[in-house]
Image (cartoon, rainbow, N blue to C red; front, side, top):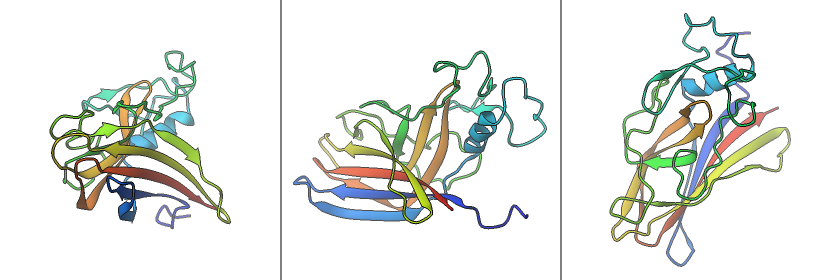
Length: 209
């Protein structure tokens, strides 16, 4: 079977913008073009262990590019040095204000490339000029529709500053043996949040049976 056949795994993102009074202002639904090489490296690690590190001649191997751009050696799923109770998990369940895990947004516009390792210009958490308030991340399996199964990673960001804030890129950050980005997208038209407005961002990982 050729690698060029239609895959049965994909992703999409949905952004719902709310007015100050809670009514819906705008809805954006797009197919995501977002998987970066760290995502494949994550899958590779789940399928191997720390001793299986002899793939350095390949693009996808056991190392990651962290948020600083450095190559970080991974011990793999069963490696003795993995955190999180030894399961080697890379968690996206960020708490309120935590922009190292889960859905994050930025103001960059550079097109996505496979080896992207961070957002071009992440928007900080806070109430100052140019900042947004990040709620906690929710991760849930949606009810199946036929043979399609969806896992949604969602987060609300709100503008509690004194001026409009816009974002034009989004992605998912995960923390485990390293802090890594596994998905990134650039939005065709930036989303503008006026004072008091918020946006519910849902990244959906989709598996078609």
